[in-house]
Image 1 (cartoon, rainbow, N blue to C red):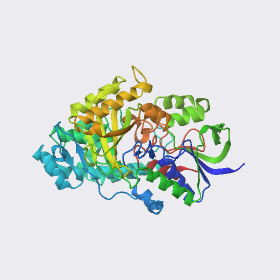
Image 2 (cartoon, rainbow, N blue to C red):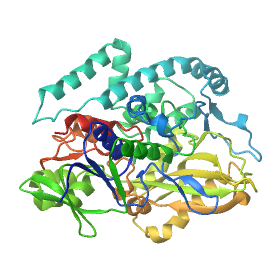
Image 3 (cartoon, rainbow, N blue to C red):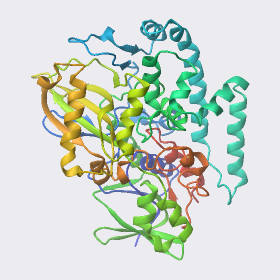
Image 4 (spheres, one colour):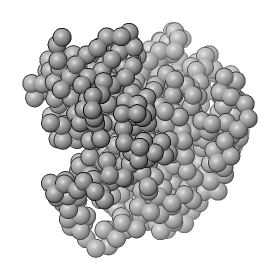
Length: 513
């Protein structure tokens, strides 16, 4: 039986990044994906005639160094050079216009002109804020490049040096910015923006980035860090878009893997990981096929990897308890609308985040295991491939809808999410309802069953103060290694993950034997 150098479980973007780097080194690599398409969360797929959507992420891009190292441009990856505006809806008028709302354009001068309608002081602070966020982005990217040392035990000096270099990078930013970043990490998103702006409209628009994909409100400790993290991933407030849809990222990575000699098998679900006396030997597929490998890398989330694929009996009891304690808590739903194009929604990243209080109250529903009646929404539009008649897809990111509902179940409650999303957005855009041709709603349960996200958590574990950096996925195991020899993690649940950037997929290659 053939033995591969490395088997990678899951063809999400992090798994494909790791596969491409290893294949480029000349390793025999096999990627196993249970779905019939590659990409994991980073997919563009069809839900009907002329109804092609970016299923879970409205935009994103890999780190520039990964794109360069793997020469992904030659595999068809083209990122749009023009950044669309970030628009926060303000008030409800009978026929809203683009100018009625807060428009944070990529052009600072245009953004300042819009901010000035709400506060001249905030407009004057916009450029200094952008300068600070640029430094915060540099810190986040440097952090994501570092292998976190295993603390408090299992400390490795070489990994400690990476953390020391991160501290030096932070210090070189200057005392004022260094302290602002360090203080900003445990802050609430509300506190973070309150240091820069006075207008509730402006503060809420920016603070919404701190809770995007997270089951916390803007008054939650650590959402200041999440704000910086999400800003760094996007390179700003609005989404980075990819020509042909975000699935082109995964397609280009898969093409790169194959060009380097790697192998990808879709429709190949891993039943369990073969373990013999704390050593990984390979995998067994759902159809009973055994495949041997010197190393196995799991791009699945830590809970699924350890509790399902490895099995608790093959792991130390304390480790199992820590894995069981990982906070997943997904509360995101997606509502996609195929329309005739006459919805009236402006082009860009559009959010319903009218005030700080509104955002916090939207989160209340998740705290009580229910669905928000007044949700935080983030909306993007894209043109359909259809030309006659012209159609447009409206994609709605819905927060908060708790994975574990106190009343009802997701077999029936998906209809409620869809109705709330459409009704809420229609209050701002009256023509929306009449423009709808078809709909597709993805509940938190769909995110789990279809996309393999335990509890519907987009980040493979909440990015919280007790689950970030050297405590991700759990304290003592932050360097991609596991208690099972030759088994590694590379998904969003380890440090560097969360959102679309590929850092955790690239970093695992640095530690693999």
